Length: 164
Image (cartoon, rainbow, N blue to C red; front, side, top):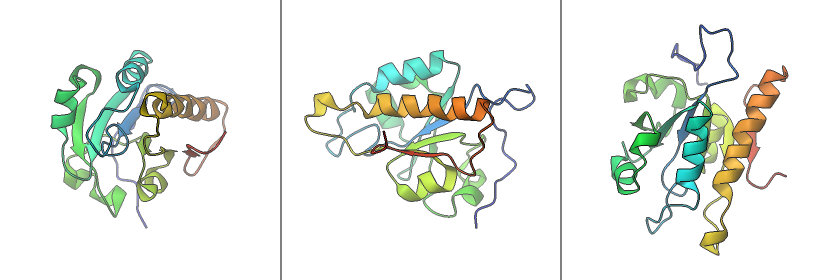
């Protein structure tokens, strides 16, 4: 069973954990499609989350994906890139250089979402231009924060793309 490492969580020491949070986005089938197209609304959602005070990270099981961040000019919107653990998720964070706790994870991999909680995103939809998954992820972040502020405690908050 994964145990939480003593990594800094967003908002520690401030007395308010509701804001900001460390948000980790997967790359393949989350931010980019199989044919390497940027999913609709990524820059707008990243900008909104950053403007809301959150810290954004990009991670991938394929290593640090600066290629995607630079190609789509997202570097000003994120803190950094990390390699994502593919198993034994919590225990491997420090060894992969992840120096903050992922407070909110957006990923299409069920195992990663269940390890950390947060948003299980749908694969890109067709017609591609009508894909609204990034805005659904934004709404899930806000629902997570609202529930936490209201005192609703989850062992692991999990929202899915197919929930209303």
